[in-house]
Structures are given as structure tokens and as C-alpha cells.
Image (tube, rainbow, N blue to C red):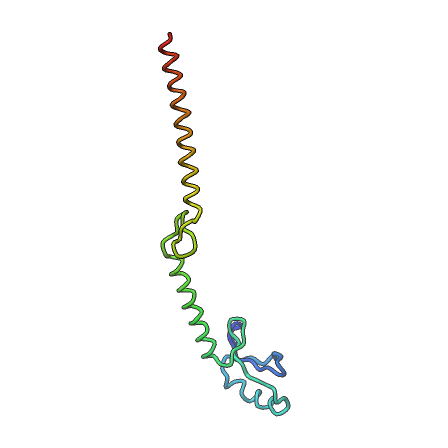
Length: 128
């Protein structure tokens, strides 16, 4: 019995039959007899959960899928993007200048508060 995941099978009216074999030659006599009574009978290769016209077609598809996976892995191995990366040509956040301005304003405000507190401490120290 061939492995369950790759074999030749006979389809009649688009429906799978119980006829399966590892080589096409084993099924050929049965296929020819079925073809006399059912002109829509077809012999197809089953692999990877899909039906293929030939074993070669299935192998080519598997190779193409492997290549696509390798391309995805290479793309995933590219340097990681930092927090500031954005999609688009410049890869910058268009609102960053406003965020920076707000942060600078807040920093100046905190400095003024600290300077005022220091002045009050110095004055309090001079009066004593």
C-alpha cells in the first residue's frame, strides 16, 4: 500500500474512488476499464492535501512554496525596525515635530519651577 500522503488515484465524475497506487502503471489496467464505462474518469496525483495532474507538477509546486518560505525567512531576518520607524518613503512620524515641541515646552516649564523653588530656598536662607 502506498503512503497515505502521496499516491496516484482515480477520479470518476470528480469524485475520488478507492483505487490508489504508488505508481501509475499499477492503476493503468483498472483506469482503462473504468474509462470504458465512465468517460469522465481521470487519474491524478494526490500530495499535500491537493490533487495534481502529475507528480512533477506537485513537486514543482512544493519547490516554489519552499522558495517562497525561504524568501519570507530572509525578509524576517532583516534588521529589526526601531520604535520611530513608520511606513512610507521617509519612515518618519509626521507628528514627531509637534511631540518634540510639546516635550521641550514641558521641560522649560519644569526648569522654571525648579529655579523658582531654589530662589525661595536661598531667600529663606538669607533671612535667617
